[in-house]
Image (cartoon, rainbow, N blue to C red; front, side, top):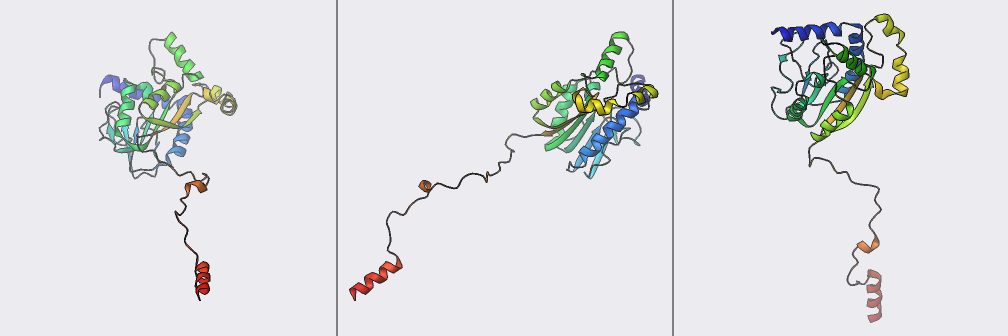
Length: 262
């Protein structure tokens, strides 16, 4: 493992063990647990954040965890780059990208790879840091005042609106957006506890200012949109029902004609 990769891995593990990191893991774990339980298929992949068991509630039989760091197989089954996934086209039914886009060298390519490996009607789940939040403001302040940034402030935060545009260009339909982590990213446990009311107040009045966005998107394919019949349409008009070209005598009329002849 190179010195740079080892340093990044140590920074990630250290931050996830901090007060803000533990808070983020608890909030995101709850969102992933509720989302993946109702998503089905044969193959599921979690790319990144191998320390978190984000697929633990999934009922998909084949579940894999990939890491960007060449760590041991206790936390992940393989190590690979997120912009060149070692999977065949249309082979993944569920793909999780927890905080991968803001730390990817080529986030556009990462999404293109996600679209390539995913099955039609498959689901893509993304969590990322929200620029329009106290977390985004903290990242901007640290970048302006320091030349040596650690995780997560060294990432390039991507706005939710921009992410939606990228997904739409790649043929994804956003079906769910949720926000979490409304408490500012305090490192001191006492300050974090003091501002715990932010989770209730902010989530109700200004939910879109949460520190983390959570997006579930479905891969759509042209020509596969099902057309459902409209059962509320009015019945056929009488003018559209063909009428007989010539009338035929009824059985009663035939009996009358026979009696007259007699």
